Length: 67
Image 1 (tube, rainbow, N blue to C red):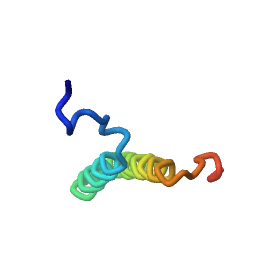
Image 2 (tube, one colour):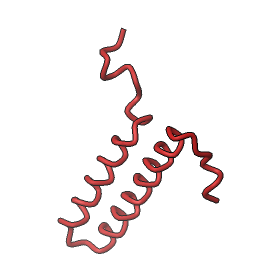
Image 3 (cartoon, rainbow, N blue to C red):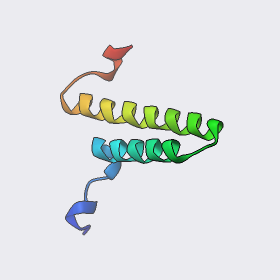
Image 4 (cartoon, rainbow, N blue to C red):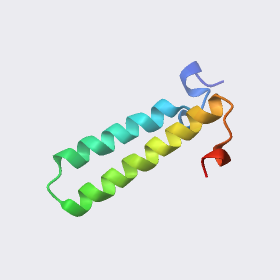
């Protein structure tokens, strides 16, 4: 049996993606390479979108409604 904190996949929790977005933005802020900054910012946007999608599903929102 898994410990309680591992029983649920972290990828089903929006806080996991929000934390990763924050990490990507901190790395972007500290970088001097403009290509890397752009890539990390895009990665952060994708993580935030995933977190928002999870939060929307938790509220019973259909992700197809955003399109």
